[in-house]
Image (cartoon, rainbow, N blue to C red; front, side, top):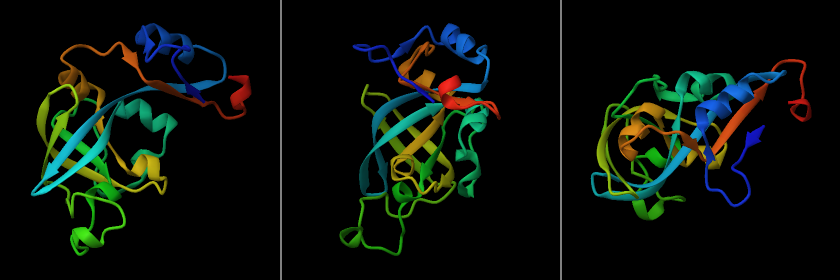
Length: 178
């Protein structure tokens, strides 16, 4: 189940209270927020626009299989800062020339490499690539993920809002019941 902002709003607000309310509902396994910022990634001479999604890594494990889709390195920790996980298409393949790529990439980023991320709000940071994942879903694989803690540093304040909240139903419940 995906909880979106009210019509006309950009964010789900009063996040702590909203998450408490949703997590307290019968049939809810866990609810977890997502916050997304546009960014420009630079690696060597490659530049690529990528959506960076902030997640609460421990809660995300309850609602998404992302942590099981790591093909190199490891998944994010709750308080990780300066570390990022990226989709395989974003990382790219060093054996494919830029002009021969089906989809633009960073040209072969590996775990442990450093990428420079310039966010739309003007904040720039070098991240160590902690992991590379492949879910098989292009929308997820063309993004990058950081911890909620890290994104709070990017925006310069505690995040009490989200672009959406993903909710997983408990076994035996269906989404319409939640």
